[in-house]
Length: 489
Image (tube, rainbow, N blue to C red):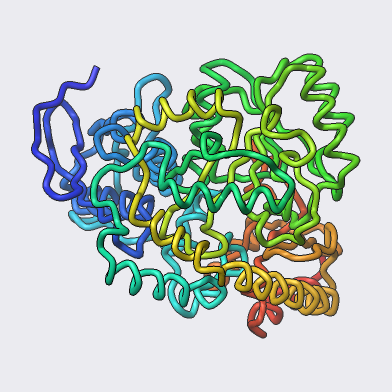
């Protein structure tokens, strides 16, 4: 058991325990640097300078999460990135410990490329990139595609009307006006609900985590897509869940595999990204979704629809929440991909009874969500310009998909499928190639790639690369790829 002395917080500092209060991390919610990167950077600096010695035990994921006011997913991602970089060691049933560092004075050199090239390495390089780094494999839109003008206008308007901003904790459900706007958005998609079905969260990651924790506990089996959302896998593992991957095909999950595994694994949950799937860029067909709903009802598992990219899809693209209603489906989304990831505004849409359970967990972990960010998003949605922004964004991404597709075809790469929109596409070389070695080579050339194995819950080998089409306008990227296409395998 961890033994801690009371250490006063300073600002948003975090207590770090190892028998006594050793040091504090100072996090800023207002920083442009994500919380994960802040934690990684500050812990790494203390280790490299020798302030935190070999063998020092760090607090558990749950302990640091509770003391810092950030989600377990944030802490889990930070710790796992430090493990991947060789600074921490994860000991089964014991925790995380500082590893032995090379004896080259008190300050250890930064490594150019980590020896462990995996999804956590990808996340770290994405956050720590330089202006000249080509983010070909990253998972978000550049600032120029986001709704910066809407955020500025909202800040200006709210600043003149301070009564519109709640400086207290606010409603645990979240900003009431924003929840009403979300209900209107969902109704336009044929999804009927009221505000008692909507809970605001710190981004979609917290929404996913809260929903999973309501439905599954240590030792339970949950299904995820393979490939799927790799950044969430460490959080599921930290909850002690048995993660089973369901192959993702061009029109949705493999129904045959889903049924066979449901018969023997008795899953509690299936998390599925139905529209503009990450990383393939594909959307599920209506017939596949109907069958998924039938299998969920037959085998008694709950569907969590991760629809974080849904606002980038064509409005008539089918969804589980529309076909199965919120009595059978929990829908998760956010405004990170369309307005700004820095606002950290996500939400859960579900039945009122499930919302009650999720609300209890939310209050236990974070009390309420970010009322100021929610007020900004509410103003943007109520202003009426958001729908025009979405229409322009969809059109721009659709044109970029066509343009990038032609460039990849000319380069000799083969697509998994041709997406209709969104930011992702999946490509492979015409011959066998060591993608992890290629990824290291690309990193040294200032190009960030994302091999398909990163997105497998079991890190299974994959011939595919995920590309973000908004970062495929550099001749240097295609020159690098073209040279490898014509190399002898």
